[in-house]
Image (cartoon, rainbow, N blue to C red; front, side, top):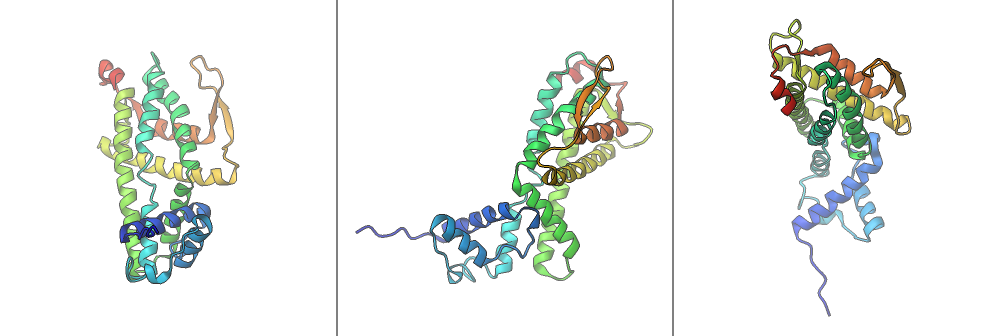
Length: 264
């Protein structure tokens, strides 16, 4: 007779957290730090995998409290800093197709194509929407002195700071490759310009992702006279907004090295 496999503490921990993350995907924007309870996760595990876990097997053994468990789950589902590498890949591919366009035209075409592709990826990831819901919940309901909320708020703040730094660096590199810079009449320090664009761009992306949840996966399209000879081109509302953002804060760099810009 074969002895049943006895799960280690690490295996049990991963099994329960994975089930909680799966449950989070179904909660979407409605998730809050107190939504994912032991009982709901155990029921989900038994219903979907036929695995029975008891409170006694995890409480005060794997987590000091249910609140500690909820913090770990919500920290594990963070999606704020992910996707930026993909954004860079999409932008580089789009930039390679802009050929002999001027710096302004390259920036415009980059705005029309790359942001919308990334938005579709983010919108398709239910954990991204859940993370937006978590940040809203923390911002609205945090009470100073609550250790669980304090930990979650600290992690949320760190995620935003990391995302802004990575996004600002990505925009700086794209600006160099495109031959543009933060507008000299607005910024004495170009780095401040890149960080402002990153902050506003991330905010725009979050709002558009939430909006997609209510617009059946699509944002309204607009037709703008942005072609090389003024012909109409189709834009999503998000892409048009992103272009307006870049066009407001960036300008052609008169000192750009043409060979460096083309090489990226």
